[in-house]
Length: 197
Image (cartoon, rainbow, N blue to C red; front, side):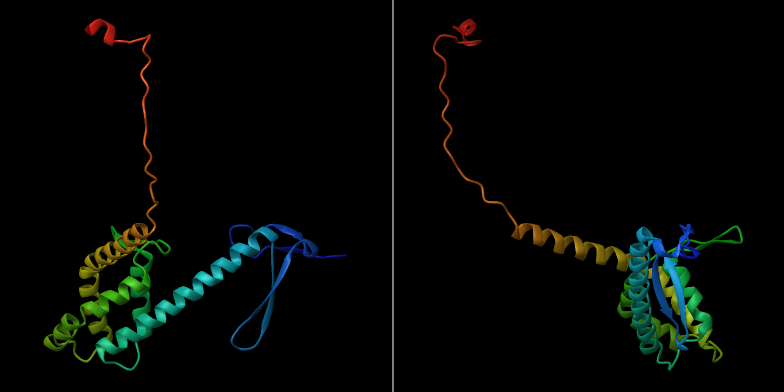
């Protein structure tokens, strides 16, 4: 007899027998494995979510590498990551309370491009201002520069994407076949022309 298990997807939490569920063996870095059960419908959502999270992590790693190069540092302090996540999520502070959102802000790709485009400004202000040897203060100050410029960069990226889409549609232009249309007027019924004569 199969035991009762709960679907591990947060939005489902449906209870069913293990025979009707899909088993996913989750392995962590330490080598330990966990058995997680998912509904047949939820398992595809779980796989898509995992692929999305891997893509996000890869983009985040690329962003961190760009920050290291721009700021000329060996590692980024762990206290700086929440600020990047807030920018990615679109979280804001209203009336002293943090308004949390999930992945509604700027993509890591846009943040990376902003750092790349304005690295000269960032380096200028990094050398001009005294941060008292604090890497975190420097990173936060330069993040404010990035936040100021990010809307322009996002607009430019959207324009480039639209231009590429237009060029693709220009390539796929349907060919029109020209044909001659002849109109034969009915001699018996002149329609409105009877009144004009």
